[in-house]
Amino acid sequence: MQSALALLYPAQCVGCGEPVEDTHGLCGKCWAETPFITGHVCDKCGAPLAGDSDGAVDHCDECMTTPRPWSRGRAALHYSGAGRRYVLQIKLSDRLDLVPPAATWMARAARPFLTSDLLVVPVPAHWTRIFLRRYNQASELARALAKTAGLDIAPTALVRPNRTGKQEKKSRDERFENLSGAIVPHPKRKGELTGRRVLLVDDVLTSGATFAAATEACFAAGAREVHVVALARTVKDA
Image (cartoon, rainbow, N blue to C red):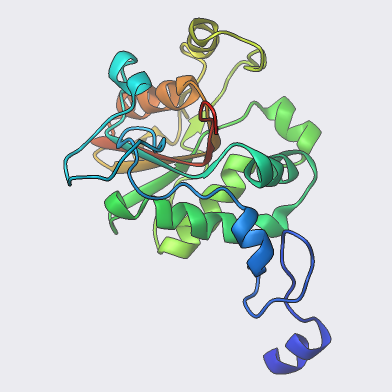
């Protein structure tokens, strides 16, 4: 049956639609144009760093000056070019076919701390945004990542009780102020986080304000440790 379906509906590149061998994969051209983050990176946020790694834990300038409550973090793509396009297509254009490959890229990026005891938790969206978009892109990525990596998931362990203003066009300080206290443990499900090592998932890491708020909420629920992974990282001059 699978072979017959493959003949009738051959796998297509999620970037351009050209036939590919791997389901939900990229063709060679789109792969080359996708800005994957590789090599020497910041251990807190996954931003690329200059030079080669000597095996020591290094941090970018932003993470050395901005406290990060989580332990380690990674991102799969630069938020530029095709990376930005994929993020926006998932978020705004119902391109959920991009989610499985995106989850695979995120799992590869998070490999340095991806262990079997991690509990995957998506960064929550306010219900009004979910109503307008019909889904929370962070939740879709989290589910696919949990499935890809064989991890447990707590999809509703965190909530946003109040709708906050959009982060776009806000300064760094305004972003942190906007998200302060905006994410909290679900009152009936916070026990899912108690004593667990958590992997927070979101689509984009910019200032880190959203991940910071979500991390603090995890700790408030008794989480033992928190790591973060984003599909894309905004990087200066990327």
